[in-house]
Length: 187
Image (cartoon, rainbow, N blue to C red; front, side, top):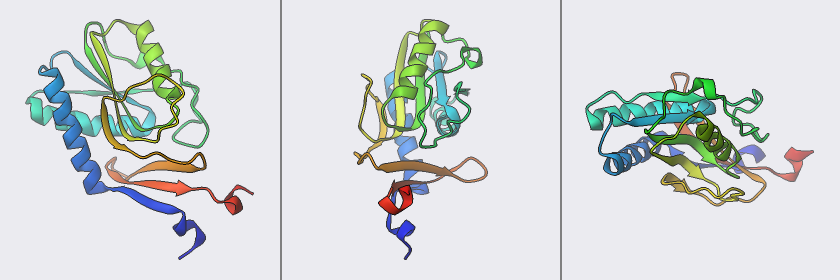
């Protein structure tokens, strides 16, 4: 076992992610009870991939087409890296959200900066009837007043740890990993 293997821990397998997204889809179904006014937005690459999977599950449950829309961030360097997102989304990528029920999806929420920036952008793009947040993993360490209504797993982390959601080449979730940064890796 290498040092890197010792600092990598499996939080969720692909099958657990699938079950979790199914549970979240049923929670959304129970809360909304109407597909005509439901908009699913996925933040960045991984949140958009999860939103697509979630929309497929919702389409099966609602027996109606539920489409997911990606939310692009202005900072192109942020793709789940350790660097923080600018938290500013591009409003021109959004569908009509006026009087719609909006679910914002991301893979991992940490400080909440990206999610909060997306909320700010939504407020300038229209007036939804309600906005709810969904995340696969919540790391804690919130700096913004956000409530994740649809959560897969709460995993409080240390500041030197990182949670990463892997996807296969065809956009299916692979696993969620907890990585601990050692002193040797930082040098």
